[in-house]
Length: 221
Image (cartoon, rainbow, N blue to C red):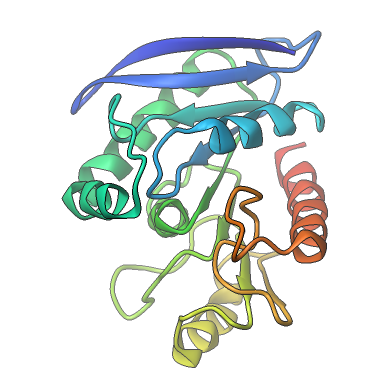
């Protein structure tokens, strides 16, 4: 695996991006963009990008906070509230375009919590993506359009989202062939984050990761 930190010139200004490439990666190797939780581009998110290389994907993790790194929940909440989600989605579209210009054969996207919500936005507005995998991200299909690319949603049954949202997601699986929704019995919010001591669920996390990798391989091949 090879790692690098680059800065991309995007429409809303320069953005740091962490990139992890599998050994032997070619320019056309499929890439998966990883969108951060409200904690920013921390080691946990970099770890997700690195882990994608084990499945022969290039992991690409943009720093939506542009260098700001919260250490306390109040700071993370403040940064998340201050983030212009529309501008962040625009920047991610720029990264999709940059990857394709570099020769990447296909691009997928995944994200967690706040990042999962941004993934939903891109799944419904960026047809150049090949697949979208939101983890416990909020979405309201009453606003905006249908899904443009196949999605695979992951949520714990003990998460805070209303049942109506899951009903919407299930109904919109027909938007893009191959879309899926998975619920994990007994799992709460942030069940994928091994640094989240109160919420991490190793069994649900392992199953969700296996499902995500299988889904990404199917649609990015």
